[in-house]
Image 1 (spheres, rainbow, N blue to C red):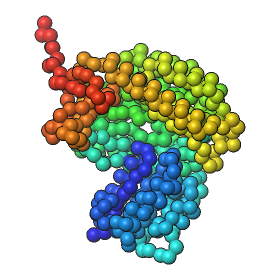
Image 2 (image 1 turned 90 degrees about the vertical axis):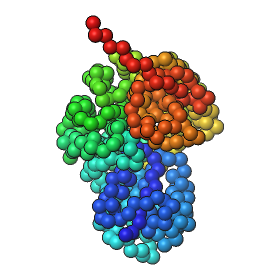
Image 3 (image 1 turned 30 degrees about the vertical axis):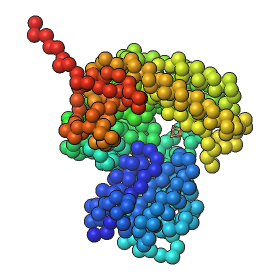
Image 4 (image 1 turned 45 degrees about the vertical axis):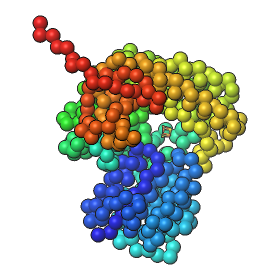
Length: 440
Ligand code: SF4
């Protein structure tokens, strides 16, 4: 039996796709093994957003070759779509497949026979118009369920539409088939995954559903304890979604909402589809119906034209906003995006200083959010990993907790009380008092 190993860089979507491709290999009789177990074939799923994607890719190929010198190495993913020729020139690479080809790799690379020149199959991104569904199965705790791919938004800093193509989605029927399959496993949490999740519903170029339709249907699937909406654009996060999540027993109170900048001028130059007042209003709405809700924010620092004043405006805006943590991205130029040609480039040193300031603010925000919940009873889903005799888990509203390792707790949901923030910055817990039930 030939052995195949996988390496994934990047986002949840890549993880869900690698997992799906791995299951395709297994169905054809290949054995999935760890990277270090002398595989015959390596599949490396790349990301275009990762800093130094080229260097990382080269390093992984080198490591693969050191483990199995005669192995067959295939590169797929966003970076493979954007730079197929460059990647094919990396020593040791046997094949490069673009966005439209990656799910056909078993047929395209029939038998994985090595040749002198690497094979490159990367058609124009316009060809990537088919939706391939899937979900990750890397651990028992949670799965990334892919429901949408591609994006029609064309933000000026972003290469994703060039690497993944137009917005397209799975049908509700098919998402439900996958969800029921997941419900039959031990997995307790489903994270809905897409490039522009809130834009869910375009099939064959036409809008067939809205994201809210999917939310309502998924809420009815028995056997899934938790559903998390990973990331949703503020202009697509409607009141009906927020109100529904507030009432749902399955959708958890956690939203990750990209802001990118707190300056309306920059938002316009980034070609984002909202102003900061809408963002503030969304946060206010969420908090009014779910005061416990965790809200994460993506923000970019150092975008062209971000003056000191504009940056401080973003800083103050975030400081006052009732959000729980930030994901800070330092702007870096990407080929073939409109932002590359913009004036008023922010020096790298300034970008890094601003990034540091916002990371510090993020720590402060997270700590404040955790502090608000000390003494509260929550439900934790414990994960499998053990570190120095301890284990971690997350509450429904995404508070990371630490407990003494107990194998019985792995992948279990347990009612606990949040006690104190520890040195690691996570929360220590104790068993929650049984809930008082009045029989009067
Ligand atoms: S919404 Fe903007 S940032 Fe997000 S994937 Fe689409 S183009 Fe990129």
